[in-house]
Amino acid sequence: MRQRGAILAVGGFVVRKRISRQDAIRDIVRGKAIRTQRDLVDELGAAGFACTQATVSRDIADMGLRKLSDGIYVLAEDMHLQRMVSELVTDVNRADNLVLVKAQPGTAPGIAAAIDAANLSEVVGSLAGNDTILVVAESAETGQEFQNHINKLRNVR
Image 1 (spheres, rainbow, N blue to C red):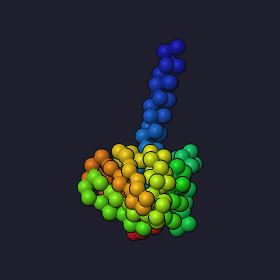
Image 2: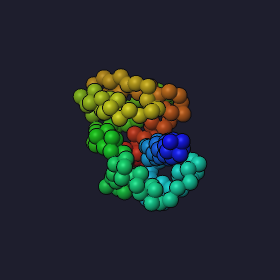
Image 3: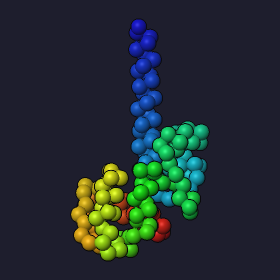
């Protein structure tokens, strides 16, 4: 019985480690233009996760990551947001933790709903008008992360 408990504890550690790694992958993919599994392994290494390309490949499959037409990985849950942003967002500006997203007339409420549905960790909330969305981030740093993420989805470098 004790031995089984030890195995579960070890198994629990492995699960926690995988969840932590996948949380890091989520942050990396949302924040940077990742084109290859090797790039992702390198970014994970810089974040303190030692893993192989095979492990990353399994994580990509488990998380449902997709590649955009330009070869950049995006999270499955961000695909709807990516389509809306790439087609409808015209500009993104930031002042500290406030990010102003400009869009085609009449489309801001739908884009704000997609932002909210994506459950982005850096977003506290959003407010939409007709063609403008005000997104409140936790801090100036996370505001920059959100702006980078939206520009990545717009295919703006």
